[in-house]
Image (tube, rainbow, N blue to C red):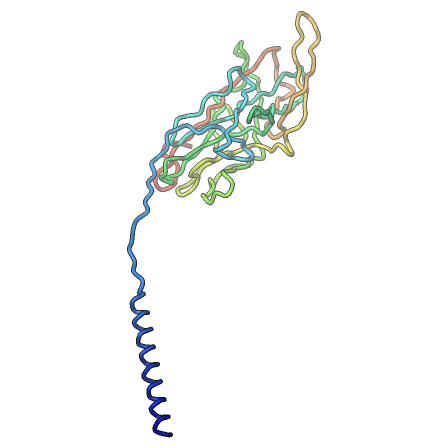
Length: 281
């Protein structure tokens, strides 16, 4: 009996070992193989002009049509890329009665049209950097001359101020914002004033700088329409932005005329070390 039992156990052990050997062979036969392939994408600088966007919700896929309140035919077109000024608001302060007291006038809010619907936003300037170099840039504005009448008379002491500046880009972007953007800008006739600037590694893509906001500084207001043939002026409703103002001293001698000035916005590259180019303030 013992001998037969031993034979049975020995046979079971041999069979078990054979099964293990077969399984081990199967595992070796299922070894993983691998092969490498490639995925490639290239980019070049983009010279296509970028359309204006909503300054408070920048989205290049949903451009807007800004209205220029200072001239018919719409705003001037943006500059060519890849480093471009896409849009800059004109400032319309409307018509006011002549007074001898100090006065501050708010500009019309920036009207924009999207999908046929008109709405009002703060004034803004929009810049796009599609160079793909992260080289940096700077934006300035120059009120080329004091507000001047068609007869050549200056509005002495008049000061334009842009306040509550806010810099924005496309939602979710991880690109570094321009590091310099004064919260308040006072224009000085004949002088370049900094609006915003980006050092190396900053400011790629689309950026807007808006002055005030539609929730707090864009308000209901009125303006005057001059009367015809001796008729009294009439008031009408407008939207104004209290963050963009024109201050005029009461002592300034005012003519019954229109006064104008040109605002020149200049966008320029910066040197390789991130500093401003030589010869520029």
